[in-house]
Length: 245
Image 1 (cartoon, rainbow, N blue to C red):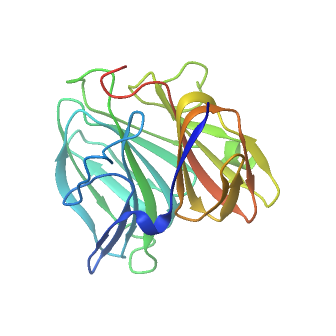
Image 2 (cartoon, rainbow, N blue to C red):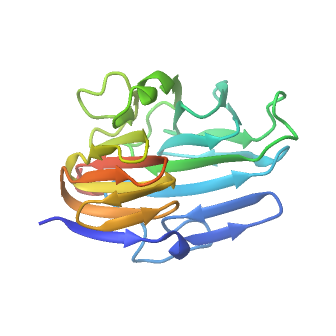
Image 3 (cartoon, helix red, strand yellow):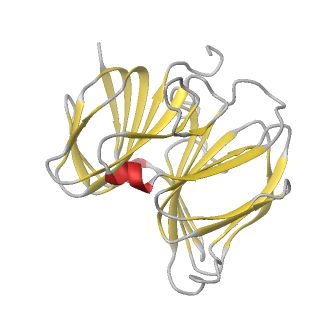
């Protein structure tokens, strides 16, 4: 039986500073709730807005698959393994922290600095194994998104050969950009996490969801998601929980 746990945008943890507006779907940093530490393999889903000319200074990560999806603006990535890139809407990015990596994320791309904030969602899932070699991958999937439907953009699942690869065989991130009235079917999976990044949708069996709302769906069975306004949705398909992979 499918179970829906709807998490409205207003219920998310909030971090607000002079340069950062962050909304956390799970326990993060100083925000802790023992009943809200993960869903499926997903441990972090942060909806961040970073002011121009600012960003996250160099900081460490370890043993985590970190996927970043930009909704507007551009984000500059640099890390201690020599990887660098400018992430923009339609470009998926994965950083494998593995045995340890340092990186920074800044809204200071020379073509956009001083103009606009950057908004992005950063999501963390546990890897299949600890201590792997750190790595980085980015891929522009704009053409696939423009073709419509639910697009796998970061995956460790079989059959998603066009997606960037994450080191987690039980998880995949799908993205869809939906016109009003357009529908997609949820993957059939033990755990599905849906985040409405932009616009508004109706989820079969659960009802309307607005921008910033999320649904944690247990035993999803292909229910339909339909846009009621132009929408962009991020959907994690997961087949295990931590400790059960």
